[in-house]
Amino acid sequence: MCKLIDHWQTHNIKTFSPKREAVDDFIAHKDAFMQRTVWNDPCRSWYKSGLINAPITALWPGSTLHYIEALSTLRLEDFDVEYAGNRFAWLGNGYSQTELDDTADWAYYIRERDEGEWLSRGKRRRDLTGSGTVKKVKGVDFSGASGGEAKL
Image (cartoon, rainbow, N blue to C red; front, side, top):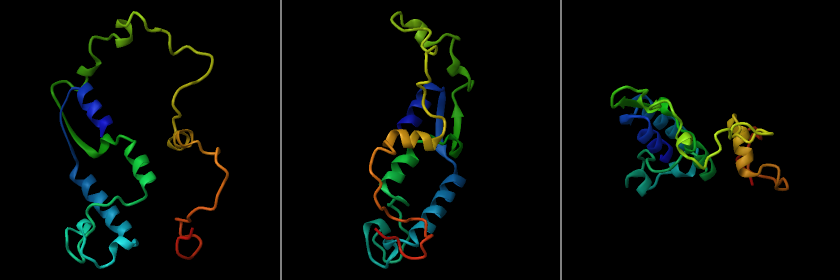
């Protein structure tokens, strides 16, 4: 959400709202996911609006790590955006903010090795989570390939 707010503040955006189709697709995905979880059992709960067999409305369709990783990516294609004038006004006067900072290195992009962010989501995730630094342990099989229930 902070990435979206930053984009809104720096790109001359007047309004943004989620596209109806994106909302409907997410709800369909969430509903299909929840069908195979314990949360779907008949009970009266806050996440079912207090009704016994109501749709689950307040839970993420996945794990906490899945939630964090999914929301770390800004998906502007899922929003209707209205600009306050020319959509390219954010380009400003053609100068970088770096050029206004007399203490900045104007050639910061020239370096001996690539220190930039990985371009693939998988590489960024592995770098962020320290993948390969923990001894492999038997985890949960979410794939369903084992033919049985998810096991620890």
